[in-house]
Image (cartoon, rainbow, N blue to C red; front, side, top):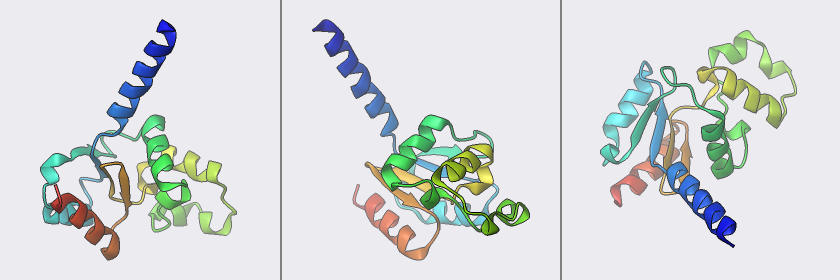
Length: 137
């Protein structure tokens, strides 16, 4: 019985730790900087520069669990995507996962996890939803 309690506490703490409100961005990206400046209550987010601190498997798994797919997190606008001629390959979810872990440029930026919801990329509708979510705090 005590082992189950300990396992439950560990799972609870892992869930609590992973539910950090966080923004994954690229500091050198002018679009990311512009978006961050426009966000209300951005001080409530933990900032994670993906070039300086590459995403971990656990972080990617959390993003995947919230988004439902690795492809949703993958940027097909990345120069490396074009250089590697990936558009002419039939990529699987495992391929997207591999490339996301391989190089930061494949992550569609910014990715924000806030109150258990994920916001991926810089489209205007996405940024408007994120702004509303942050403003409600």
